[in-house]
Image 1 (cartoon, rainbow, N blue to C red):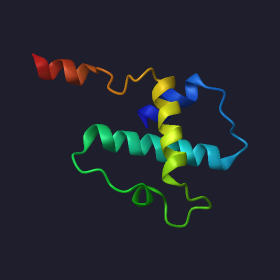
Image 2 (cartoon, rainbow, N blue to C red):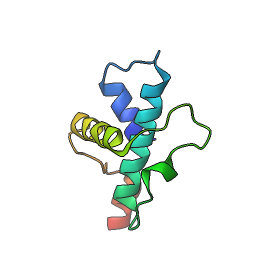
Image 3 (spheres, rainbow, N blue to C red):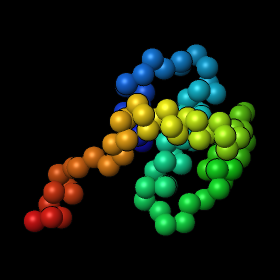
Length: 87
């Protein structure tokens, strides 16, 4: 949820259009799996089964780039827990 929260707090978010928030959530989940996992699931596997909207790969990729550019490609934020691991 970190990516989603950071993205929403940095852009003028269209809350009245539910597809925008769903696309943002799918994109942020996709980006999180790409950062953390060695095997990335298919985009369709990340989307909710009974969702009102199913997004194409190209649409999600464009949203990924928007999220990445908005977050200035800073996908990994240091936390206190990470600092303790280094000690």
